[in-house]
Length: 137
Length: 137
DNA sequence: ATATATTGCTCTAGAGACTAGAGCTATAGA
DNA sequence: TCTATAGCTCTAGTCTCTAGAGCAATATAT
Image (cartoon, rainbow over all chains, first blue to last red):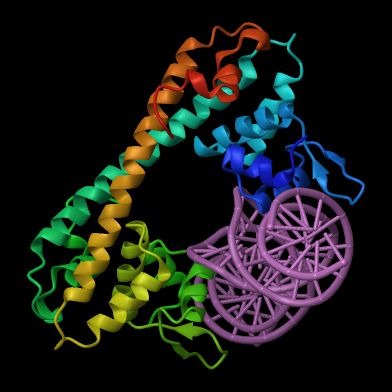
């Protein structure tokens, strides 16, 4: 039997966040102590790790819910789960591409700054003037 | 003289977003027509492009506010602007590193999925079991 | 000149994924 | 038994918009 605090420490998910997940229907309502405190089993550790893991990978709460519901019908083909992962991979790749451009641009901006006056500050000018950019963004 | 719609079309910033920026103090309150509609000048185009540009680069509204206020004191050294850009570059690099790991992990997950039953679905197992991960995340 | 279509206005609420605080209660350790 | 810590519920705030309702102004077509 674990308290919500134990669960939190063992999974790295903050206490209010655990309660929030319960509210969102990601974890089922746990048993309560005589004094109405939540009491968890080891199985909850795994479920929470699953959720945490998915969130770390950037899946939305809804995507995780879908996966959980999928995982509760082990007889069905796993095409759904595959689709979710694939869609997400696509997203991630787009984000990376955008961030790379951004990194590039910021590097140029920072490297041009001479620390003198605002008037000729490259940061300000770069933000003001689209013509100074190398790529589209 | 531009309407808010013109400004929107020319900068790619949506109309409600322009009003939101006004509310947040990023752009000053424009003149109004007889019928109380906002009327902008060309200078507003530039200011909005500056903001848009900053947001595209992922700067927060507050960071942009800081930059605007810096740019209004052209006599001061531009160390502040430089610092904002540098801090942001750091953030961006961290984000890219995280996303790369994630991409890698999702690739592995997707490539292992055989489209059969949930029972042996790699997506589900990978999310359940931290041990299947290659890196930390 | 008038009818209509489009655009604009304000105000409020919602999204997503939490996080923080108030005010109170339960439990664990000394 | 006392007290510190951890737990409870409920509400509201974060951030950056976005959407909708209900109404007014402007532009275009006839």
